[in-house]
Image (cartoon, rainbow, N blue to C red):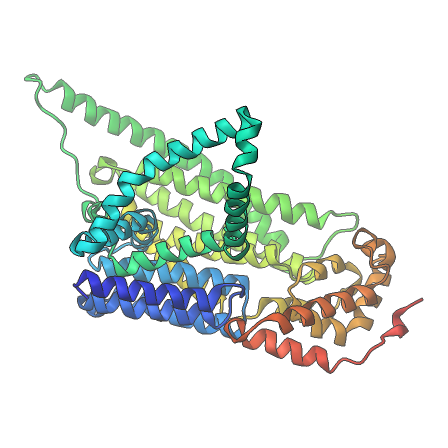
Length: 519
């Protein structure tokens, strides 16, 4: 696809397909279809990229998340698919890039450059055609005088009523023309097409920036020793540098001894209290214990990692006397791993008493990523790796976790777990309102349980729903059902997905009215 004419034809065709798939539609089967089209185009333009393992890995992630967009149609799967696609595109266009974040930035930065590349391609095509070139030159000659003419025309119509009356018929026709154009050409559609043009141009016109490749190439996974300058003939600069490192090492040893002792006390308390036979004491605020305590402990783990990164940033790694410092660092990492597990148990106990929620699942995922960060931090110190090593490894791990999370329908998992929870009187029933429409069949099928949970939790349904003007839980479910059914009837095949189709079929089978919930 080296010929610019072929590129323009393919760009136009892709833009037409983009408009057909997405305009007036929501995400569904159209999203993976279009990303597949752009992915194939990118590979045709960059055939050598097929041999890259990073391209193969992100292409697999893009395919999996695309399938899951159709199956689950969750916000997470859509988000993961878009992120995976942009990372894949970055690797296809610059297959020598190793880090996931630089590949992603390569694609995103291309969106900003794409309009310019598109304009250049159109201009070159116009210049190649003599008739079009003449039209462009004529337009450039006429455009500025016409703008000035229109400005003076409006000045004269305001200043002279007779002139305005004389030209009224002309202005009426011009006004009708503008109304006709903007009636059929909405601002939303122009923005929509503009974004689609940039997205397609990124692929077709290879909007490649060397910046991200250069950033990636400049990084090294193995930390290199920085030699001290010896320009001063008496060697003072080198002496002071070594002295500063030794003082930093001594200070680091004192700090790590003290903080390890402090963390040891915290871990012993948590192990004795939380790890085995945990029981919530009477009049104990478990919510505050988990929410505030968890966030502070996570912050302490992240702060610990930042301090160790600072201590082992440069030449401290190469000192022969740093064995004690490294041993204390390993001990602190191990203790933070124990603390990480304690935080997980806090969250687990909270779920056991109060049910599942998005944030509680998010805490588990964040702890998993933090634990992986502690492992890579240990490797970084032991094998003298750089910060680039940490960033590259952990972004790949986070990407893998994101793809795996998309495999599950979390709305159904949450509602089923909470509806069958042993501690029904402490379930946050109001959380059901934040679940997607795909949870409606489960809520309908278990509406008696929800009603009972409201009563056990001393929630007045009318009070709970008063801000939404429903009056009862039955009316709330029925209204959400009708709204969902109405939206589904408006959608075409482009927006189709299995999750919504399954929900639509299940809701159709529900008989109404459901009057037995009314009091």
